[in-house]
Structure formats: structure tokens, C-alpha cells
Amino acid sequence: MASFISYLERRADHLLELALAHATVVALALLVAAVLGIGVGVAVRAHERSAEAALAVAGTFLTVPSYALIGLLVPALGLGYAPTIVALAMYALLPILRNTLAGLRSVDPAVVECARGLGMGDRERLLRVELPLAWPVILAGLRVATVLIVGIAAIAAAVNGPGLGEDIFVGLARIGSASALNYVLGGMLGVVVLAILFDAAYAGLARITTSRGIRG
Amino acid sequence: MAERAPGARRPRVPAIRLEGVTKAYTGRVEPAVRDLSFDVAEGETAVLVGPSGCGKTTTLRLINRLITPDEGRIVVDGDDVSGAEPDALRRRMGYVIQQIGLFPHMTVQENVATVPRMLGWSKARRGERTDELLATVGLEPSAFRDRFPRELSGGQQQRVGVARALAADPPILLMDEPFGSVDPVVRERLQDELLSLQRRLRKTILFVTHDIDEAVKMGDRIAVMDHGGRIEQYATPAQVLSRPASQFVSEFVGPGATLKALSLTRVGDLEPAECPVLGLSSDPAAIRAAIRRAGTEDALLVDDAGRPRCWVTVEELERRFDALGEAAIAAEATVRRSDDLRLALERMVSTRAGKAVVVDDAGACIGVVELAGVIAAVESLRSHASVTARGREVRPLSPVSD
Image (tube, rainbow over all chains, first blue to last red):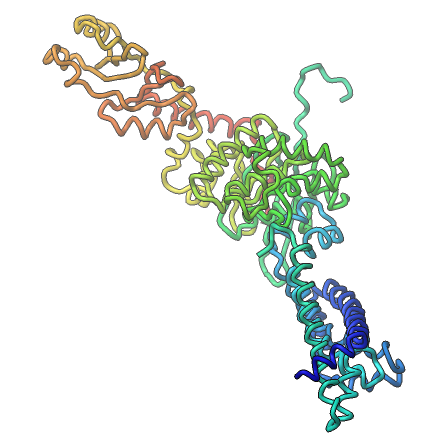
């Protein structure tokens, strides 16, 4: 235990650097997945069959083992950031898409009816009424997606990707040696702390971005 | 018609006109409305009333183009709505629905200012308008402006709903069972407030309900609809109640049509009954003389402030002229001029005197009404309805063809 703490002290700068890279990859992947997931969700919300199809595709992504998916992307995208971000975005898609659809469908039809009846156009109705009302549910989807890919992002080290996975892989490769466990534990601890920080950020975001009129 | 005598009434252009409108929903054999035609005159309240599934809500939604007719024409203020841009059209019509449909994430102020904001009004003007409207619908602006819908009672929410519909001062209001989701006491109050609002604003209102009592109360004209959106009768409430056009209408109106018609007439419209009114401390002989002079059975005694106290008959005077207070019937049944005859009748039959004293705001007697007067009013309502039914005023609808 004491040796782990002194290890952390020694490697603090290095771990911080890895954690920052890890967070960056996760954030970029979330951004891609959010644009896609919310965009597709909005586009297919009124078409039952397209919505089912989109959910099925996103669901399929999630069933592919992460190691395999990232590996499969390497021939097309090379090593490093690109395959990592694409793979993580694919995993994040399902929770975001599903919650976008669920959120939009949970909007009271009477409210939508009134918006239409008062002469609010499609675009304005979406931006001013439907999305704001669906937002808490969409945000919950983003939160689930984040927790999911913060962990998966560690695998990215397999393709020379950035992040805390690097230390975990190094440690696992040297298992049996004196410092191996410290490497693995350091990487794991970093992932857990990152997940907690992301979650706290979401709690704050939810407060700031949800109208007082619909806050639970 | 360029020249018009000053003060002359504008020619009566129907604000809303439906011509042969048919709408069928996919997957249903029977159309929801079939070959429907009627007019709503400018400034009038027309009520569509009928059993559920009769097509009344469909009719309303056809007018603001939330749905599109399969056949026929809908003309609003002289323009065919099929040529209008739907959103622009809807901003000229207030829309109120039973489920209220306030935007839960917006404040009362933002809800009310929805249409003005879309029309590009400045923030200051929107704020002013919101406050004005909140006051109009009976909500203190400073207390309600910044609240969210969930912080309001059902009745308050629907007041906001009405304010929102009126925000950009649209000439037409479409109301689909607007008071259907509030309790009876609140409903009655909202109805009364809408009536008094309407007396000032003179909007063209198309009001949908399944409740014949509400239709009679709210409508200048009632369209009784049967399934398939067929209008069985389109006439004034008095006509519908006293001369139902078909078996369906009389069944829909139900028993007690005459009693319902009583709510159409106010106490102030009644012929006052002959009745001597004297002070409580009057001399029995004077009372007897007054009764004899008036040719009535009894006299009303009032206190110093003119408030009714008791009824006294000649026999009572003869038997116990020394103990008037005990012998007499307390004059407890009072009505105001603005009360309707339903209430007056209720008060009359709940006292042994069989009549009611009309009082002013201070409670002082200003007259007496009795059963005979109510009966006479019902008679005249009936004969008047039949006269207008034959006259040119009423256009019962283009013939229903099927």
C-alpha cells in the first residue's frame, strides 16, 4: 500500500497527462455520438420503423467486443485517436439515441398540440418545446453513455490510443514484476476518478440546463 | 360597398364558413365529418355540442388546419384557409383545449407571450401585454407572471391557457372543451368569466362541448351534432330547447328542456308581480287596506332599510293582528335582477310563500316575482323561438345531404 502511494506521488504528472488524454478522447467521442444520436433521434422520431431500425443498428454496435471493434477500425483509420474516438462513439450511440427517442415521445401530446395550434412551426416547436422538455431524459442518456465509454476507453491503448489504458496495458504485460500491480492499479484508479468527475459534471449540467418548471 | 352610413352595422360577413366539408380518417369506414356546412357570424359564440365521437373536435381542428379536409371549403374572414400558410393562419386564431397544454418548462409570462414572441413583438411590449391579459383573466400579474404551470391549480392553468390564446388579440377563438378538466365549481366561474370577457371583446368563438347545459349557457347559437359530423339543428339555445328539430336533438337535450331554458332568462326580464310593500311597524288596518287595494292575497313587510322580513295574509291579520311576527312567513327567498330564472324558481319553490323578493346589492327590496311570471316567461320564450325559427334571422344550415 505504501509503495502504491509513493508510486502515485512519483507518477502524478504522468498519470494526470494520461487522464487528460483519456478525458479528451471520451469528450470527443461523446460529442460525435451526441450529434449523431440526437440528430438521428430527432429525424426518426415520427417514423416508428425507422426508429426501430436505428435502435437495432446502435444496439448491434454495442454487442461487438470492444477489443475487436477497435482492432477492426485500425486498417481503415490507422492507430491512435481516430479509431478510438470512432469506436467509443459507436458504443455511446445506443443510450443517447434511445433516450432521445424516449424523451421526445414522453412530451405531452397536448403540449405539442397547443404549440401547433398556436402557429409554432416545426423547427421552432422542436427547439423551443420538444427538445427542452425531452432534455432531462436525453441528458440521462448522455450520462449513461459517458460512464460506459470512460471504462471502454482504456482498451484504446491496444491500438496506441491515448489514455489511462496505457498504464494498465504496461502493467498487465509485466505481470509478476514488482511494479506491475502499481501500473494497473494506477490506471484503474484514474478511470474510476474520471468517471466520478464526469458524473459530478453531469449533475451540475442537469441543474443548469433544466428549466425550474420541469425539474424533479 | 365603399360608402357606408356612419354608425351603420357592418354587413354580416360570416367570420367562419364551412361548405360541404368532409374528412375521413384512414382506416375508418365512416368519415368523421361528412358534407358539413355552417357559418359562424362575426362576434358570435357558436357551440358545437354532441356525443363523443360525433366529429366536433375534428371540425374545430379542420378550421385551424391541424387537419386537412378531404373535400369542401373552409373560409375564414373571406379567405379560403387551404391557401393560407398554416402557422400564419393559426396565429390569427386563439386555441384552447381541454388538456390545457401549457408549456411546463416556461413561466406563465413566457407561455402567455408565445404568439407575440413569434410575431416579433419587443420584450417590453410582450411584458405589458402579459400583465394586461393576466389581469383580464383574473390573475394578479405580479403574483403569477414568474410562476411555472405546475405551481398553479387546474383553474388557474386554464386561465393562463385562455390568456395565451388571447395574447395577440386574434379575432377568432377556437375552444375545445376548455373547462372540461376542472371541477364543477371552478367550471361555472370560468364560464361566467368567459361570458363577461366575451361581452367586452366580441370575439368570434367556436366552442366545443359535450355538455348541453354548457352549450345553452355559452352559445349565441348551438349546433347539435350527431355521429358523422351531421348537424341536426343549428339555432339559438331557446330554439333548440323549445323546438328540437329532430328526435335526436330532443333526446340529446334530454328531459327538463324547459327547466334548462329557464337559465336563458334573467329575473330582471320578468314582469314584476303586483305586491304591496309596507314597513314592519305598519298598522294592521293599513296593511289590510293595501292588500285589498292591490287585490293580492298578502303583503310584504320590510324593515327600516327596506330589507324583506315577512309575508302576511289578510287572514293572519284578522286572527292574530297582535302577534304579526309569529304568524307571518319569513321572506327568505330573495333573488337579484341578474340571477337566471332557474335559480329564481328554485328559491320560489323552497318557501311557503311561493314567490321571491328581488333585492338590490344592499339587500333592499325592489320588487317581487312569482311563479306566474316564470310561466309567462317560458311561454314567451317558446313563442318567440318559434317566430324566429320561421323568420329570416336563422339560417338552419345548408341542407344535409346524404
